[in-house]
Image 1 (cartoon, rainbow, N blue to C red):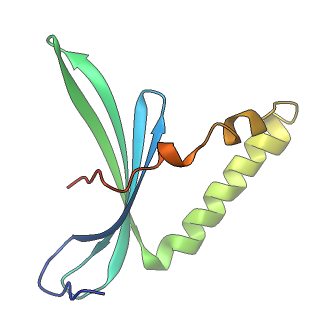
Image 2 (image 1 turned 30 degrees about the vertical axis):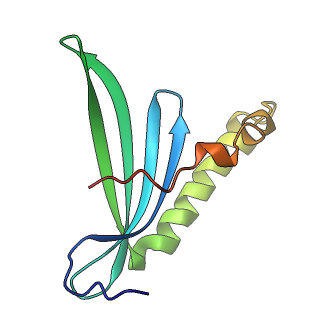
Image 3 (image 1 turned 60 degrees about the horizontal axis):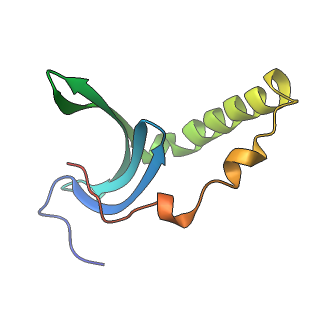
Length: 109
């Protein structure tokens, strides 16, 4: 692994998920102190004055919050799947996910 101590916000790993009109980016970055954090970016393409612009929303997630975040996300998804929409076939979406939807090459600053 390369030394990232001199480069704030060094990107270590990236995953892109296309979801309709939105794209989600999951990026692991490094701080000056060689610590790591996750950014989750939602990017949505919109038409403005005859050109396309990208509206972005970003969440910074630090290692001490990973477990709480993942647990709350899973609990929320489970509630929707099991309690609110128990009769809905979510597997139809899971089978649509393919490796081609994930792209490690596109990076966001």
